[in-house]
Image 1 (spheres, rainbow, N blue to C red):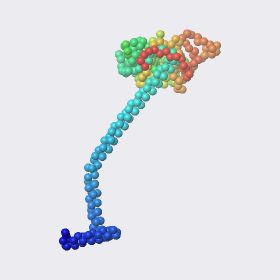
Image 2 (image 1 turned 90 degrees about the vertical axis):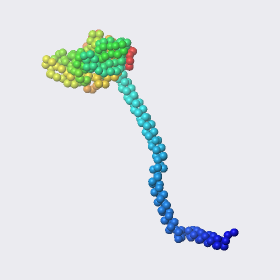
Image 3 (image 1 turned 60 degrees about the horizontal axis):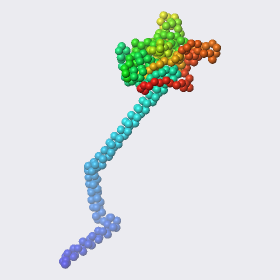
Length: 332
């Protein structure tokens, strides 16, 4: 089948192959070890170079997929963060509204004022007045012109005009506003006029010999039928006094208790109390210097001397006050 020469050639190849295999198995120190190492190093370098060159191309798909997943996660986290921020703002607003309502209820409870709650919906000048706000309650809620407007800190202003569903309030700090007031404890009276500044009133004493000091509290002495100002409403605190006792004119600078830059929930006094609450509605504060009037003769059990006046022996609000609050229907 095969020629003699062919058989000899095959035998030589087989013997050579076996020889090379035996030499390689004996430790890799055969004549081809060096060549194999060189070829291996060359091929390895080529493989590493190819991997370096083509890896950005071959990994582009996985990189794009990873970037897209990260972008989706960022969008999801951003939406969740915005939702949490919105919920936090809502909670803060609700907390502020609740605090404003609590303060308003305290004033109404202690002073026995009947009021309609309302919320400020606009700020801006009206007619000849510069400091006015608009509230979301009007004639349909029983509100009329020249009713007192309060919040949890004290007097805010009076009703200037009304519509069916809204009312305009002129604030006590307006230059066209004037409030009759008295110094808590000493009963010295005067006129608190607006200065056009949100944190300042000028209280001019009617008696030039009257004693007024920094830290004294001013409250309203009231108008006929409680309009435009109901009695006993906290107005502000004396922070500076110009002039000395005996001068023709003495003026005290008063900082209003109500912060005119942060008005939200207000109350419109639709009916004043039967009796003047005197100084009992004033906020409790260590900074206020309120001098209690002397108790009437006959001891602590003596009744008030005049109708419309509460006992002058008490000038602060007891913390345990739980009197019922007369609140009329209106927008909270």
